[in-house]
Structure formats: C-alpha cells, structure tokens
Amino acid sequence: MADVLVQAERVEKFFGPNKILDGVSFTVTRGETVVLIGSSGSGKTTLLRCINHLEKIEAGRITVNGFLIGYRDRRGVLIEDRERNIARQRRDVGMVFQRFNLFANLSALDNIILAPMRVRGENRAVATERAMRLLARVGLAEKARNFPASLSGGQQQRVAIARALAMEPAVMLFDEPTSALDPEMVGEVLAVMRGLAQDGMTMMIVTHEMGFARQVADRIIVMDQGRIVEDGPPERLFNAPTHPKTRTLLAVRH
Image 1 (spheres, rainbow, N blue to C red):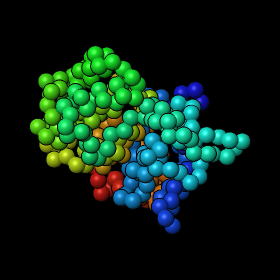
Image 2: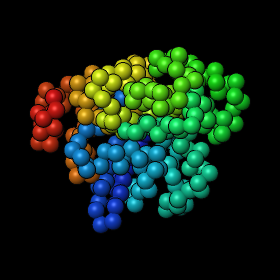
Image 3: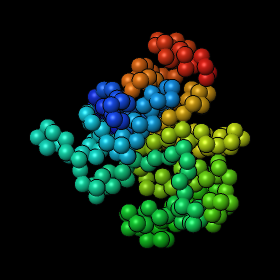
Image 4: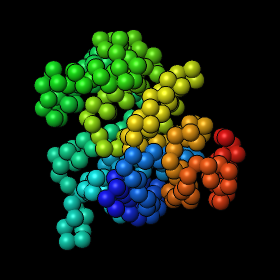
C-alpha cells in the first residue's frame, strides 16, 4: 500500500434526497493516470470535488498521501476537521476546473504566484522563479505579463494548470478541462496534460476526449448512477468492455 496515493472507501454523497455517490471505492497509485468517464450526472465531477473536500461526504473516507481529507478519526467516528487543517491538506491536491477561474485583475504570472506566497509564505523571488519555469512548461513564458482578458481560452486553461502545479501537489484533478474550449484550442491543453502524464504526475481526469483517454490513461474508471461499474486498462475497455454502460459510452464517443 506504500504506493497508494489516493484511496476512497465506500464513499457516499447526497444532494438532498438524491444519492450522487453510492459506495464508491478505488485506489490510485503514485504516478498513475486515471480517467473517469460516464454520462452526465453519473457522479464523476462530484467525486473529484469530494477528493478535494469541496463537497462533504456523508459516509466512507478519502485519503491522500495516507491522510484523511476533510475529517479527523475520533475513535472510529469521522469528525469534520478545522478549516485551517483542510486548507493544509488541499496543498497536496491540485485541481483544474472546466472554467479557468483566473483573477481578471492579475497577470498570468501573478495568478500563479499568489497561492505560494499567501498559503506557503514564499517570498516573491522564489515564487516567481518557479512560476516562470511552469509557464515555460505549458508553452506560455512570453505571456507572463498578460492579463486573462488578452489570452485565448486555451492559454487561460494552461495558466490555470501552471497555477495548480505551483503548489507542487501530490495529485492533479482535472474536471473536463477542455469542455469550455473552442475545438482548435483543445489540443494545446491536452498536449500539456499528456506531458504531465509522461513526467509521472499522478492524475485523475474527467473527460469526454476518448482518444486522449485511450492514449494517456493507465486505467479508465466507468461511472453510472453514482457507482463504479467498470475499471481497467484502456485497451481492455476499448476492445472488450464487459459492462453495457461502457459499451454504450464507447460506441457513442469512440
């Protein structure tokens, strides 16, 4: 279990009377790229948000790097942790959303250095040096002083990826990172994510880009009605899916 980075055990999540996650269990090992697929409403995005404790779970537990996320274990009963501790835990979990959520009044560079300076107390020179390396990594070194309004959607999403990486997380979560982009911008974001996978970054990705999933995923998790219905390597799922939902999804999107 030493290489298990993310672990979910019998996780349940409700929105009102609706059960969104129904006993979800899985592990992600260090360096693994796991892609989640499923119909709208199947629980994929909610699951990512629970890993980052942006959504509270009603049952089960989630650990990252061996530490409970969002809760403390008090004699077998989970008690929600203090917000300060939760914020500390989130440093290990980078998240990239469908929308870029960049601060419009800050340059690309300042968007990236803000959290390391405020949360980790880094001085500006150290944070800036790392930010410039990350901007170069996502192909935007020349855009450091640009404000979001002057960047394309694809460029903004790449800045958002660099911003998440600036906290040096143990795992990166991507929630349909290309769904808000024009088709011609999708490739530039996927190329950055492909590079992260090749570099051994641990990632969980919700996407409808099936070609990309087949190329980069170590495993694909298929969700339906809040449950994991199939989990395996992409070649098996694409060539010989066992669950009807998997066959339907890949027939529609492959």
